[in-house]
Image 1 (spheres, one colour):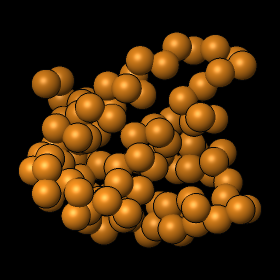
Image 2 (tube, helix red, strand yellow):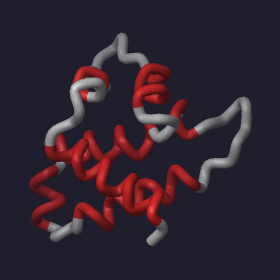
Image 3 (cartoon, rainbow, N blue to C red):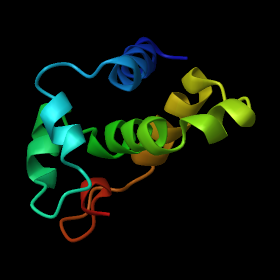
Image 4 (tube, helix red, strand yellow):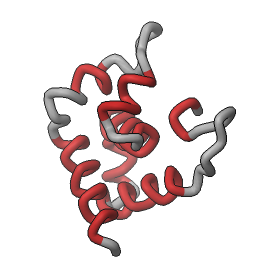
Length: 97
């Protein structure tokens, strides 16, 4: 695993435990009507998909993750790889899906 990926995984694991002050309100509001995905994109340094997916899975499906013995580090790496797979396209991006 590359250093950059290790740092991202560590950051995602921290988001799952206790989101940083600048991310907590954005992640808490993610299932609200007026939520701003552009603010999350900026706050995560262009990594909104993996941060949001990880936070929502931890919030709403913790029991499923534990029952299936999902390793959080592997989940974080998986989500990062999915986000890495999105191509640069002005009409389709990872943070608008």
